[in-house]
Image (cartoon, rainbow over all chains, first blue to last red; front, side, top):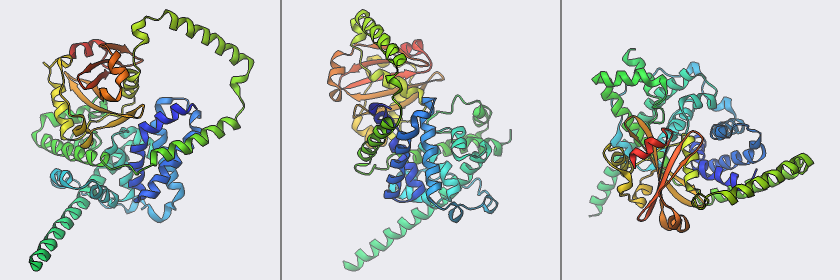
Length: 182
Length: 247
C-alpha cells in the first residue's frame, strides 16, 4: 500500500477512531494504543479489502474486535438478560447541560454508560457510521442497535445529570470556603 | 405507526442529516412532522444529540498520536511489501505498466492546459462526499449551515466564514496535505450539499491558479472557487446542475 494512501487514511479516520477507543478503554494511553494497533493491522491486512469505500467500517470493526480481544470479555460485559428495563421517555434531554459542560466531563459521563450501550452510542455520536453499519460492527441485529441507542441515551442523560449535580456541589463548596477565608 | 415506535426508530437518526435518504426513517419522520407531541420530542432529542456530537468531536487529540501511527504504519507497510512476492515484477505486469505509462504520457500531452492546472483539493472533496462522514458542529457551523441553506443565496457572490471560530467550536475538520479543511453539510430544496472551506493562505499555489471550476466524479459533482481568504468547494451527489443553481 502506498505510504500516501496510508497517510490519507490515517488523517481521515484517526480522530474518530481515537474518540471511539477512548470511550471503550476509558483512558488516554490505552486509547492511543488501540488506535495505533488498528492502523497497524490495516497496514498489514488492509490491502486485502476489496472495496475501498468499506475502509471506515473495517477500521471501526477492527478496533472494536481488538478491544474485545485484549480485554477479558466475560468480566466486563453484562449478559443481555441482565439488562435493566428501558428508562424510556426520560424528560426532555438536557441540551444546556451538555453545551455548558467541558468535553472531558461529557466523555466521562459517556464512559459511565454500560459498555453494551456505550459502544453503539459512541459510534452514533461520532456520526461516521449509520445504524446499519453500527449493527455490522457490533455484530447485532439492527433492532438491537436501535434498542441499545434508546437505552444508552437514557443512561447517558442520568450520568450527565450526576456530573452536573457534582459540578453544582463543587461550586457551592468553593463559595463556602471562599467566604470563610474572607 | 405508534409514537413509541416512531421514537424508537428516530433515536438512530443522526443529527447531521446523513440518514435523510434512508427509507427506514421516512414514516417516523413523517409522523414527527404531523404529530406535535412527537415533533417536540424529536426536536429536543436532535438538539441533545447534536450537542453530544459537538462535544465528542471537540475531544483533543493526544500530542504525537498521528505521527506515531504514521511511523509505525510505515514500518508495517514496508515489511509487508518485502514479505510478499513482487507481483509487479512479472513480465505481464511490466508490459501493462509500460502501456499505461505511454497512454498517460499521451493523455497529459493532449489534455487542455486549464484542466492540467486543476488542483486536487476538489478531488479530495469529491471523495470525502462519497464517504458519508459529514458534519459541521458548533454554533458557528449552525449559522453557516443556515446561511448556506437560504434558497435565494447565490454562493458565488460571497460567503462570510470565520474559519478559526468554526474550527474552535468543533466543526468537522479534515486534513488535506497537512492543512485543515472544514466541512459543513447543508440542505437546499431537499438536496444535500457539502461545503468545504480551506484557508487560501494554506494553499497559495492552488489559490493563485484556481478559477471557478466544476468537476464530475463517480457518483458526485463539485465546484470550487476562491473567495478572498478562503477556497470553497461545494460537493454533492445531487449532480452538477443542482450545484450550478446554488452558485
